Length: 423
Image 1 (tube, rainbow, N blue to C red):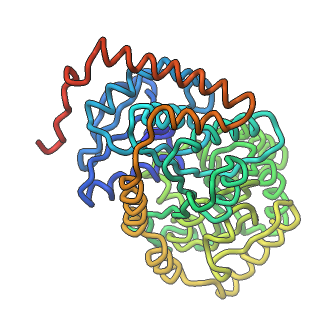
Image 2 (cartoon, one colour):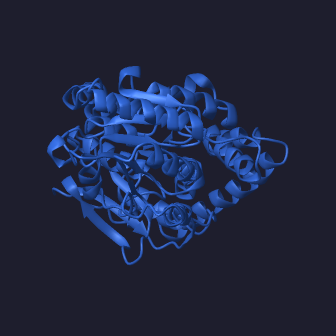
């Protein structure tokens, strides 16, 4: 598993990688995670069930993503892949530099590669164009791609020009043993609306900032509980200060994974105001805790929960306020779906054992595919555009030459094979 996003950082990708790894270990596979260092967390660490994590000593550029160099990480990836006897490289997130580098280097070493795209992306701005082109290059040599929703699949097929039959849809899941309802934790005299996300633009924090004062004026019994941190926190602080809502709007900041469940249990309604979302694991966790869900109708969100468990609205202030009014009225009248029924639905529909089994099927399919020679691999990269194609062929050819030099300088038979955790 290769990604810039992993613990101690918190988020949907981080949780997905960790829990999927744990399930694959229980199925008998050896799993190794490769990510970059977080503060003083560098080197090799072991997590639950012997999950081995390499925190590479590479500095991040922005948003917990390392600077894309490829050459700088070449020898490190080669050493880890050989030392750990890696057969399949599984990269996560189109926004992860390490995921792209790990897949490319793995393919040049003759390994199989799988990529999971967790997000949607646009087509118009410069960053989207560059990300899409990089994803196209990576997936042109990748054996198989996984998307977390059918909307995500359509988006990936369009922006990365990957054949649709080479993309599988495997949704996220949640550990329902960790997310259980407990209505005794709620304030019986108030209705608490919970919002948990990174406080960034694409999560619709500007919408949330506009919704809060309107709902607070209409419903004096409503309080807001907001968890997460990011550059848009200042917007929420300004609204709270301007409207005098210090007693009714709590900004909890970044939460540890253990605090997420406790925060959800305090809520009656979960609010998601994202502007784009491929899946949204947060609404699944909230539903598992028995909360009513109100969300913007964007991306893959309509695929996640049935209509009786979620109220959806277009991403505008009036529509979100109307959906919240409906949810609050439903709570006051007691017509909402019971917390236990919500939990049982999530437990049946989104469990990690099923997700891991379906991912294992992809691995089995990939392992049966023939390995491509470096020449054929470069031919695939060459077809990715009249400018980008030749440029990346040149870069990857240089990487191949360096790998051959490293094979001469530091032959693989001199690299110690790492023992398994239980050996």
